[in-house]
Amino acid sequence: MLAAVLNNLGLTVADLDLWGYMAFGRLFWEGKQFPYRDVFAYVPTLDPWVYHEWLTGVIFYPIYQAVGPAGLQLLKYILGVATAALIFFTALSRGAHPLSAAVVLWMIQFFTRIGYSPVRAQVFTYFFFALYVYLLEQARLKGRYRGLWALAPIQVLWCNLHGGFPAGLGLIGIYGVGEALSRRRFLPFFLALGAATLATLINPYGLEYWTYVIRAVTMPRPEITEWASMITAYKRGIVSLPEVLYLTVIAAFVILSAVWARWRELTPILALGVTLYLAVSHIRHQVFFLLLAGAYLPQLFTAYWEAVIQPRFPKADEWPRWVWLVPALTIAVWSIVFFAEFLNKKPLQLRVPPYPEKPGQIYYPVGAVDYIQKHRLSGNLVVDFNWGEYALWRLYPQCRVALDGRYETVYPDAVCQEFFDFIYGREKWRQFLEHYPPDLALIDPNAKIYPLLLEEPGWRQAYRDTGCALFVRAETLVSPP
Image (cartoon, rainbow, N blue to C red):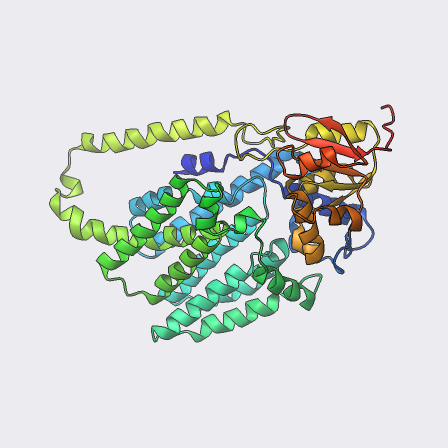
């Protein structure tokens, strides 16, 4: 099981957001005060800059400087395996057989491919979410309510590492409501919720952080693929039919198991229902549903095995010893295969592909950025949204950018709208050039704006390769390297 989890975690193409974390970390460690104002963008920005992943950047940058990509990848593997282990032990604490817990963990291991692109701040959110599930179940089932007081200090770390911390607060609230409706002891959960909520005020931005969070949670994000619903994502080709069927099958397993067992644990049912709704509404939230399924479902599998399957076979101690060799050898062989595949990926590296190796894969404008540096081009750079953080990481202070994946944390809505009108070549695409004139434009040749810029007076293409194109103003002189 460990080998399978590691194999799924073994993604090596650097995530788009990684560069933003490290750029903030560099700014933090090399500056003289906390970076409350953005310095990377040339368009108007929000003041203050509420960067909910600031502590991730503060941690990632020195690790990267000291150890390189291997340090960040190792951190990802540790947190990913720890998250899976917490879910496994939560299932055991609920009375599941270890084999049932392992089988369900294998079923839901797809969560490691959804949320563990190397290396995103979400790895902290998934770890803390799994830890919350474990502590909440210990309190609910075994009366270990003192453990709930650990949720508040955990929340201090969580809210400063990643803006996904409302998932933890929501989970505590679900447990409180579920236990109240079940006429069980619920007050400790609401007290813990109050303490954890107050703990989120321990951040560099104070109440301004919550103003940002409320705006971020409620704002529409039609251009951001991971915020699309499952149906929309499928129609747009963001997720495949097998991925849709996978979530459907897991949900069906949960529902059928609950119906068969006449499951009456209202709190887990409520938690699964809410997270399933979120998973269908936004594909990035699938991980929460899968983690809860991994924690709750094994107990139902165990009950089904003991009531239906086991009575039809001889008792385990009556089986010949050789019978156990088949599953043992199968597990051993597959573990070796998974671990060999994991090692073959060179799992400690972080790759930055300069062109798309396959449809839909992340890649970067490495050649164009090298060209900008080589020819000492500088000024205002409008850049494809997916490449913005990579550009500001490599080109600041030589160039300032618009726009990048920090998105609503730093850019006003009006600026974002005009930027996307430009990138998608919409009717008013020239407004961005008029309101926020760039000196350079780094875009995807497949973007709708590309042919428009080719025909636009005052612009010329200075560089192009398989994956990107660089435009400069016609009067720009390219200095020799």
